[in-house]
Image (cartoon, rainbow, N blue to C red; front, top):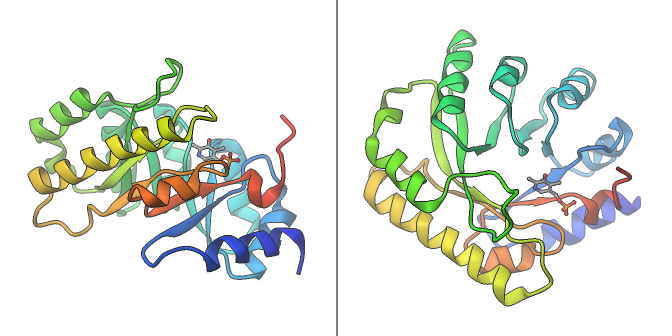
Length: 223
Ligand SMILES: *Cc1c(COP(=O)(O)O)cnc(C)c1O
C-alpha cells in the first residue's frame, strides 16, 4: 500500500458510522487521486473549477466530486452537469444560479449552506442571523433543482482546541435548530461538513458527517 492508501485506510477505519471522508485532492495530481480511488475512496473535494474540470474528464466516472471552495456564480455552469455536492453556498444569488444550471441538466444538486463561525474576517459564509433569515424567508422552497442538505463551516485556523470545538459546536447547534424548524419532514437535511486535517477528530465529536481532509492524506500542498 502506498502512503496515500495507508492514510485513507487509517482515517476511514476509525470513522464512526454516519461520518464520511471527503478526500480533498486540490492541487494534487490525477495520479494521487487514482491511488486513493484504487483503495476504494470515491468522494473527492476540489476547490477550483478549472482544475476540477480537468480531473473530472480524465478520472473514473463513478467519482463523486464535491466542490468545497468558494464558488463564483459565473462558473457554476461548468460543474453543474456532474458535481455531486456543493459545500460552500454563501448567498441566495449563488443558490439561484446553481438551481438554474442544474435545471438545464435535469439534475437536483445537493448544496450545503456555509456558516461563518470562525473569528477570522476573511472567511466566507453566512452569519448565523443571515442564514436563519434566509431559511425563514422560504424562497428556497421554490427551487426544484437544488436540495439544501445541511451546513458547512470552517473553524478558525488556531491551535486552541477549545476554541475550535466551540465553533463546531455552534455550527452543530445551528444545524439542529434549523433542522427542527425548517426541515422536520426532510431527512435529506442531514449533513454537517466540518473538520479538516488538523481538526477533524474534534469535528466528529461535534456532529460532523462529512470531514474534508487533504494534506493528511496527500501530503503538504506546495502553493
Ligand atoms: C483545502 C481545504 C480543506 C482541506 O484542508 P487540509 O488542511 O489540507 O485537510 C478542507 N476544506 C476546505 C474548504 C478547503 O479549502
